[in-house]
Length: 254
Image (cartoon, rainbow, N blue to C red):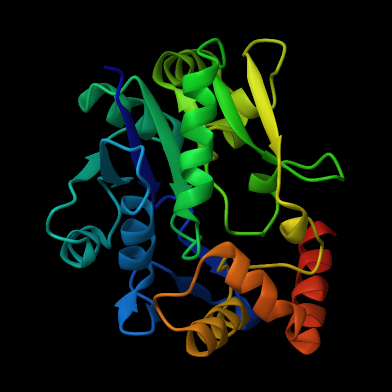
């Protein structure tokens, strides 16, 4: 039986905020847990993954912290490779995975049901090498700040990308090379649920204001009601938050 593992990528774990400072995400708190803990637990809730692994840089000065705040039953792969693509390819090989689902650590609301849909789509059509979600504006959701989605990739395709990708952007964003070269890889982009196909939705945590919005959602819904449908319904009644999310998204696009 083929195995698909979830890889929580800690590479994208800080972003500039006001004053040129940065916010380091893994240890930031959402409710009574760290952001990293939240992401790991939500990925673990997916039914189609054989295991979940946290992937981080061996040289990351937060190495001990990352190890300490990762749930005890989840392995951490500290890769010595120079970039995120190399580390994810090495993790897939080490854990003998046929395919991986990559989740960014700045996506604390990543939805396990949407993860399972990716894996089941791959099971139905084995020829695909990469599957993710897209919106009606022909934009991959992973390139947006929606923050609810993951991406699936066959391990042999990830290994090919690691061998061939030379652009620094392709090395830093682990699946960018596969995602942006449909002429080289068999890709499938699933339509995002209509309720999530909007430009005033921003659940990725890339700033202190994003974290404030995440905390407000958590406070309103509680830890057991954070599926994407509940979040979408809540935000339908929060025009001020949606307005700020839209402004932040437009600012990122400039």
